[in-house]
Length: 201
Image 1 (cartoon, rainbow, N blue to C red):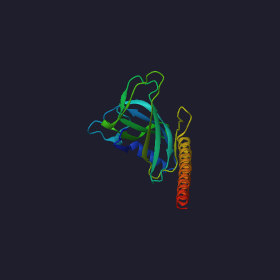
Image 2 (cartoon, rainbow, N blue to C red):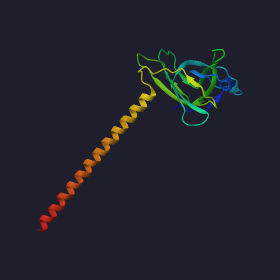
Image 3 (cartoon, helix red, strand yellow):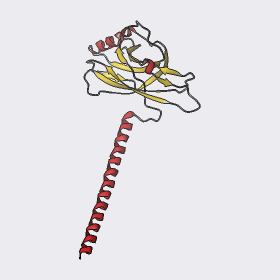
Image 4 (cartoon, rainbow, N blue to C red):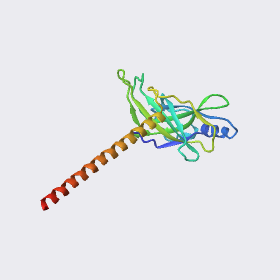
């Protein structure tokens, strides 16, 4: 699993946040994944694009984890129609300028040498990667995103709910099995006591 070293808010990102203070919407549009190596001396806040963009990654979920000034944005990437493998060294989060409708690089995320490998598609099989990032939004209130559900038409909320159901069933089954074990233990103990009493008599 990749270890992304840092998520840096760009100057464009700060400008978009400033616009929310005037009642404008902060709307995230997509992630872009690249294979670029961050050169020495590059000032990340001044970047407006990835070094070597390769594929787009759709936004699957955005939610507030309860931390003031941050949200968690999830993305799902896949290798569908990818003909050349690469290491996912950089990810850019883009948002839409409410005044111009242009997509701007809001934040830049770098993994460097810890990057995951995205293989080219072979046959009909498609490989999926999920990423979750804490993203600074400061005091912005009107936050939205262009959300795309996964190919199975199942949202992460659906999956979370399904996992909760499975865990409850497992706990219920565990409790049932423990009750049966306790019951058998009581029966064995009761039988042993009766046998001892019969011996004494």
